[in-house]
Image 1 (spheres, rainbow, N blue to C red):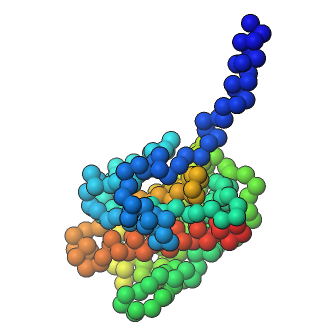
Image 2 (cartoon, helix red, strand yellow):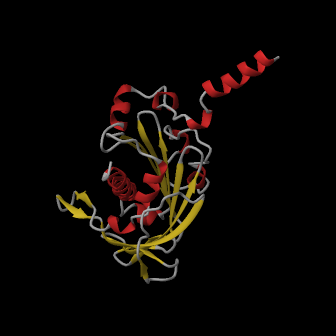
Image 3 (cartoon, rainbow, N blue to C red):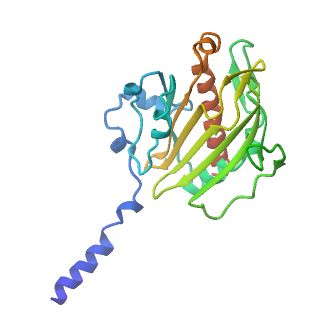
Length: 258
């Protein structure tokens, strides 16, 4: 009997906890083509644009319903992307990602390539936290946290080069293995002073999880616009540009001290 008890406790010590182990990229995406995998590990990542839910192909298995809040809205335009942040000399933890997401002011001045101007220009001319969805008063970003709250909501005002002053709500949820960042517009987005995306009609989900090979960054975003607007504004391109800038902001925030 004592021998059985000894073996039982020895097994507990020798077998690592399931939830303490990082998953591997190959386990999550075993059928990804080699060329697509190369894109995932590049600086731009792998990006798909579609208007058909059945064509989504990159949603990782997770404890969160990552795509649900976007897919439930029946958006006419969907953009999904998958990217890996490789580890440097040090590993990257969820706390590093959480603190990077908290540096709202670092969104200011981030560049994108403008095809019309054939130059790198700031997509977001200014970015700051605000007290609430109907308040304009800026508040400073907090210092780096020592722990991650289970959930948090912040409100953001961004001066967008195309949409002018834009207002968003960001909800952060932390799980056992990953972190989910939900972003939606709390006021209509306008182009040349004409409202083109109504309140809460632009929704983005970003999911972060440290894997064996690096940090997985999956995003899915959707927007609803009228046929009139869609014929005059390339909404897919607008979404892709903003996703690229937001993801590069997080990557720079995570890796700057790593």
